[in-house]
Image (cartoon, rainbow over all chains, first blue to last red; front, side, top):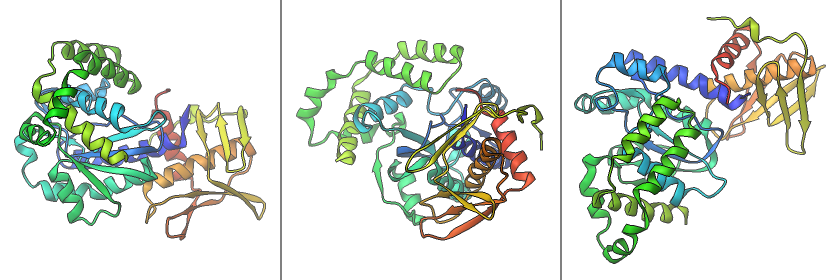
Length: 244
Length: 115
């Protein structure tokens, strides 16, 4: 059965797809929330390169059911931390990007502000649809936070570090002053924990089995390095603070 | 715009339940469910209302209202002429039940995969 919420969300996605294509990019849908959520986490834009080498390949994968935020170990560390440290048992979350067209990283830096401006109304529509009236909004990284500030975003929002490996210094900076806490914490989360959560996330997103299996097989070859443990710890601190 | 006539039911298979807060529609034949925030009887018709905390009416709100129009028509055999989106500042915005909105919602519902 299809709820009125899903119909409305699909209407929103139609407009997102049209804008991404008008930008010359490939629309990469986010995992669809089942209903209004308690937390909305706003990232930057989807990147091409690792999950698809070209726009044509990206379109094929999207048509096959590939979805945003469900590829890298950092994606799943993000989900893991949200589910374990942010959401309560009956709470839901939604991860989105300011702009939804997938592009190569070097192109993403070009005219970013103008692109974000083009997407801003759709972001507002998205948040008005998916977020409950008292939902917490979280900007992921400085760039998103600055843009929301610049646009006079009407809801209060918190800021957390970006989970990208490119922001590795922020991870180590995040444990400064919490070194003992980090040492006590670091072995409390294992790669198996992250993989188990990843499987739950992929199943909840109704990702096709072949994509799910390929993703989980790739994750199984990943390591929870010290840098990634720092990322988990930083998110734990941030999310516990946001919840309180 | 692609049509989706196969989705339009001939017989009602809806279930409807009421609570103190709102009415829940479950239209099996349409494959749609929904819970408008309020239903108002007026002038021989039923007017759905949806309350939003936002400051403006977005296209997704219209799609949601269009779903309610279909559900009410299917279950109650009354085609609402319009509904209202009530925004966070209390302003009421009238949404007409047009054939274009109906076709758009049916098209969208066809694309929504079963959960």
